[in-house]
Amino acid sequence: MPKLITPKSRFPDFDFPLVSGERFDLQDMDPPEAFTIIVAYRGLHCPKCKAQLQDIDPMVNSLSSKGYRVVAVSMDNESRAKQTVKDWELKNIPVAYDMGLLSAKSFGLFISDKRDGSEEPDIFSEPGIFVIKPDGSLYAQYIQNTPFGRPPLGDIIDGLEFVREHDYPTRGTSVA
Image 1 (cartoon, rainbow, N blue to C red):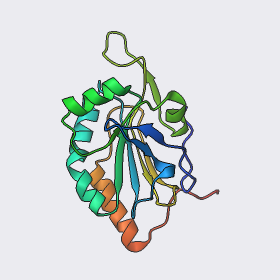
Image 2: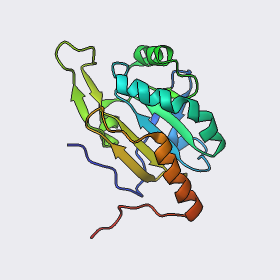
Image 3: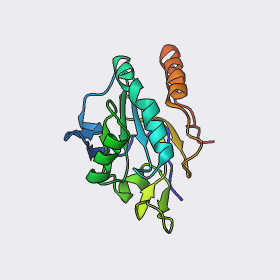
Image 4: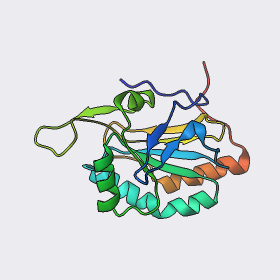
C-alpha cells in the first residue's frame, strides 16, 4: 500500500531527465509564480494516458503564462518516453522518464505488474497528479490505482485559480 504524502509537507526529490535532453529538477529550479503540476502517467502502453496528455499538451503554454509549470513523468525508459512524445504528438508538455520504483513509491503512487500477454512493462506506476506550491510543499494530490477516473486538468486549474484569488489554504492537514 503506498504511503501518501502529507499535504503541506515538502515534496520528495524530483529530478529526472527529459526527452528534450534537459533535466527537470524541482528542487533546483526557480519556483513558478503559481504551482508546479506533475502528471504521473502509466507509460507508452496506456491509451488513457495518451488521451490525458493529449488533452493537457495544448494547455501547457497558456498555463505557463499564468505562472504554472507542468511536467509529465513515467517509469518508462528513454526509448519508450521518446516514442510516447512521437506517437502521441506531444509538442508542449515536458516529458520526463526513468522514474524509478523507489521514487514512484516516495510519491505515493500505486505500482502494478505486467498482465500476461500485454505490452505493459514488467512494472509501472499507476497515474497521479501532484500540485506543488512555489515553496516546494504539496498542495494537492490525485492518486489512482487504475487508469480510469482521472480529474481533467482544466477542472484542477479552475480550482487552483480560486485558491490563488482567495488565498485558500492547503486542506487535509488536521491531526485530529
